[in-house]
Image (tube, rainbow, N blue to C red; front, side):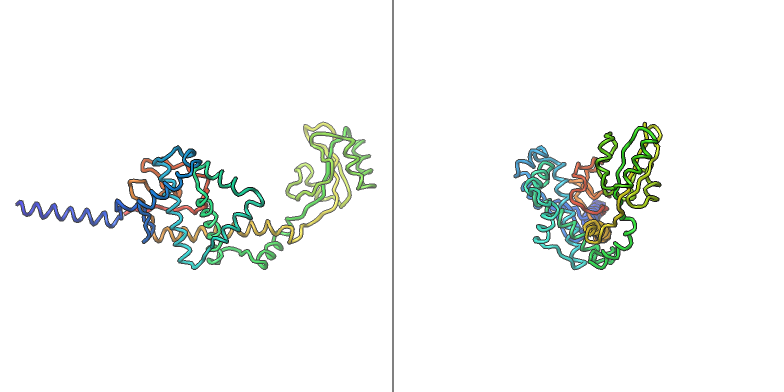
Length: 332
């Protein structure tokens, strides 16, 4: 009887060990990302390294479980992106990251960027890794063939698609006391279009435009939209608006469509966003394939792509500061 009990206990114990092994919950591992590991030692080192910056230590209140989960989130995401890059044979170099950060700052002080990040608990390296991941999403999106592309031919094709909606009109408007004045002013402007600033100055008001302004057709104030659409260049019209004393005089100058080069930055930004979205989908697929398991000691990896305490309290991270795609935690 004793032998049978010992045998049964041993079998149950081995089964439990096997189950733990299958769930990959080694006490020395903080998280598994596929075949890769974030060890407890690596996590602690990463936490200590960030807390060595007094600004970060002050921002997060020193060592704590919440900050540890924040750092573990960053390390897990880094592994996911590294795996996605390996699988798709794409690379973002340190020089690429440096150029990207400089372009994003557009002449602003780089030290201010890092100081702001530190005040929210993020290091210089975290900022650069966030930039790397953003660039990787673009590269992954391009490699997937699911985005429209950011090369010159693709951008020009997109320009032709949206060209009609890019039209701008030189528009001015101001309020005059009555219809008789409005009729006289409209005729005056038609005879001398360049006189608009001088004429408008005679009728100051809060809603008045002192000079003609390039305005997208979609941005024309609704009460003027119909009249602006029908007006010929260098002509005006008047309209009464409910609850607005007086009469609105509107004057339409030239209609212009921005050139390809003028809107190229906007088109590039739009195309990059599309590439990033496609790239995020690639990262999602890698995450679902390899699986992410977090040591229960630290919490669980959630659908929001953060390491969260098991009770359900989400770590207060930056608003998607690391720019990662949503991820799903997997357990054993």
